[in-house]
Image (tube, rainbow, N blue to C red; front, side):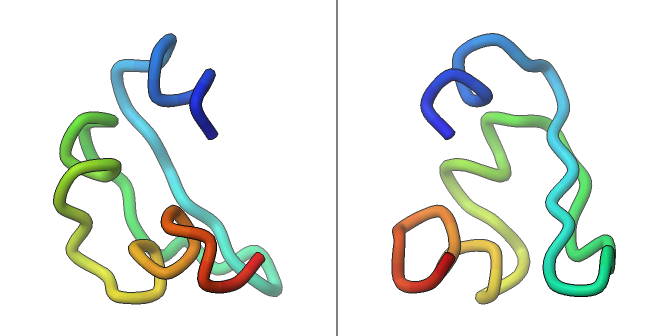
Length: 47
């Protein structure tokens, strides 16, 4: 996760079953994601 945040401009988050949950600028995804599921994944609450 840390390397993805450092080297990418945009990030797509896919969860179980290949569902695209969120796609946006990497900084936005890691600092203020739209989806609660993405926030939970990034912060380590699951995954």
